[in-house]
Amino acid sequence: MSYAEKLFVDYSEFMVYGILVFTILSMTVLYIIFRKTEEYKRFKSLRFYNVIWKWNWMSKKRIVSLWCYCPECGSELTCDDESCRSSNVLANKITYFTCQKCGDVEKSRITGGDRKYVLKIVKLEIIKRVNENSYEDKVVNNNG
Ligand SMILES: [Zn+2]
Image 1 (cartoon, rainbow, N blue to C red):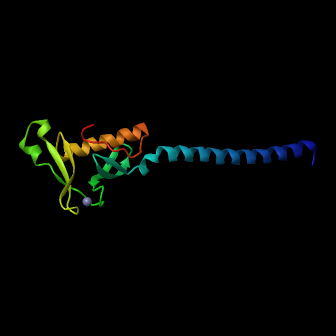
Image 2 (spheres, helix red, strand yellow):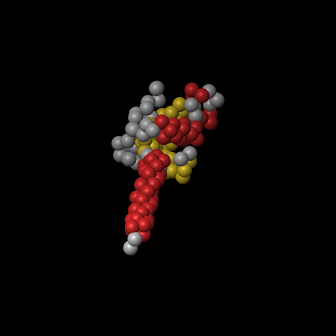
Image 3 (tube, rainbow, N blue to C red):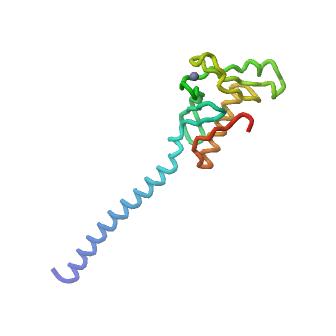
């Protein structure tokens, strides 16, 4: 084997390893980026208005099966938004969340609208936290 041939063989071997290393590195980088963008999917519960909210993700902007659960026993809460139909005054529109398992105890009340309104503000809060990367459990009271 001439020197030139040997050099060519070494060089192509180097190229093969180079391509291999490059491929592994770029796949790792892509995986890290993917993990980072998909991180919000692990954020599936939040303590908000003194109760636990749980949901599933369809996409980054789409939350499904959102509902609230008792912070004491974990049971699904029942919701009463009758006052919203009988009043036009926002301050009188109250949605109550009670736990039947705890003996029909009121666990939360949200002023301003019915259950659809409540689900909407909870969804907005979840998306806001995803956008701000603040997933930690914070207790947010009705009063502020
Ligand atoms: Zn309970």
